[in-house]
Image (tube, rainbow, N blue to C red; front, top):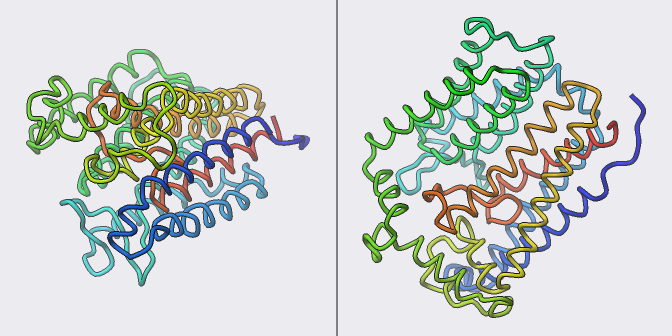
Length: 363
């Protein structure tokens, strides 16, 4: 395969999203940084070093090493991700927050293994689908092994629990399986199994049912279960056409929960208005279109599956986050890629985009 120039339009979309992310993160985190650490730059500086800095480093490595080498490493990468998911259940090296145990803490370094699991599973599925001339329509040949692997990964994520991440992984895996040639009956069965699992998880934890109630009726408990979605809608609606101006939003100060994490899209919309929201959405759409174009123009099947999976993962997570803030889907608690505060998400997302740019060199 001859090497060409990378997709510069994709690269430009990534740069635009990162620039917006840093700008809105500084605005959304300044008050909390001042309150907790006595200066307004703490969270911004942390994201700059441990998110963007490390992310660019791993993205550069992923860009320089030929993506085909990942094919032989797919199983070890997946096993390392599963090992990381197991480590969060060891109290001595993990941390619990909000009733969830999702982070590994070693010294001053913290990492969320479920973020790595997203990329690891995509690499594994791309190699697995590439190893088969075509996906068998026989249920016991490919469907059962596919469901088994998802089941192992899902069980570990459910135990944390991290249902938002589980949803992103499951949607991405189902989409890759469909692209690989699965029948509509197999895809329908995946959604039936997924819906049954979701129903069971909702029954097991009342707070998940509360989120569904708040989704269907945001006025049901405006100071309780509906509080976050109502404040997010107030922030987005008060932005108007051009917004209040960067750094001048009011909701982020003490009214909007998780302003620099789950709710950062609402902060951006309040401060930059409808036009600012459209710019951010357009940048993500451009990223998605270029990613799918790379997948379509890649002659190598492994590269095509890998590009498809990475693109769908980032775009699906983007619109799940935005959809939750707009009241289009229930709140899930997953970050907005390249924008929300969180080093693990930033590093793994940039590494995935580095692989996507790598594939574009050979498309």
